[in-house]
Length: 354
Image 1 (cartoon, helix red, strand yellow):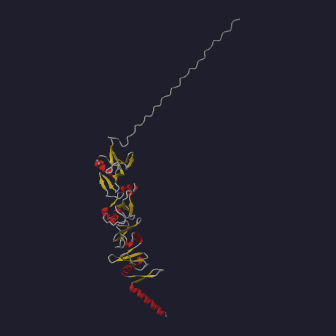
Image 2 (cartoon, one colour; image 1 turned 30 degrees about the vertical axis):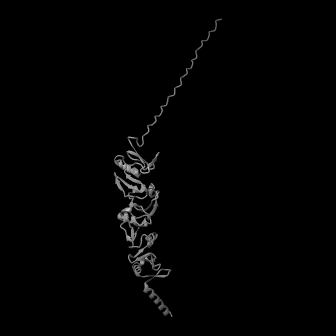
Image 3 (cartoon, rainbow, N blue to C red; image 1 turned 60 degrees about the horizontal axis):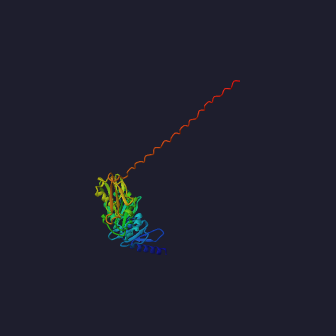
């Protein structure tokens, strides 16, 4: 009867092979691969490893899982393998039903620093040593691509992060190795216009931004960096500007910056020498090389109140106090010597003669 069992096994194998390729994963059932995914598997068998699922319907595609990743296929995108850190990031972004959509390519070697990237219909996932896998898409992705991507800004070191500023605005930020990009939107919004996103690239401005409250305090950048009177300047949503000059990097309220520009800027008032600080009666004060500007945004609902103290006319920034003269010690009177009476010799009477 052994020949009958052998014939039965051959017939079963033939039936399975007629529908596709038969592959077995250790300690589990065998799964067939067929069609475009089967062809991809044949070409990349060693890399993919054994299939761990049947081919199944995805959001708008067909998917099959393997020991070393998953293959996604659709009629418009073809079959592509997503694996490793990129697969984890892809699933975290919603997979084939998320913003990234379906893969358009396999992994591709990036231009520099040993990184890789993989294109999807809705964005790109980048991976680099020390940075990990992170998706770049939407307005931030468009700006990143326009700035020559990883060559200029480095690889992404975070996913997009939603932030609500202290003034109640919703913004989105993303960190890169050599930059920080913000845009005025929400994580659920779809916007690929690069003009809605701005990078904070100069490290001095970026460090000042982060150490003085970051996106919560300043909001998103509303313009790219620009040069004003020889200084590098960047404007932010909540009205502050960060100015980098040879005197350092300082945070200046918008109205104070406007006042500075209207009054000659660095040519007449000099460069800023302090961040904004408080003095009695004035919530916002900034010192410049040749002037002090005091600003109270609450005293006027439209423009606030602003005042300039020009050094050399009103008062200097720090008038040196005249030192109080040290009192000259009054010499103590020397004690008068009291004369000691010299004893007068009393003549001794001579004895009387007998």
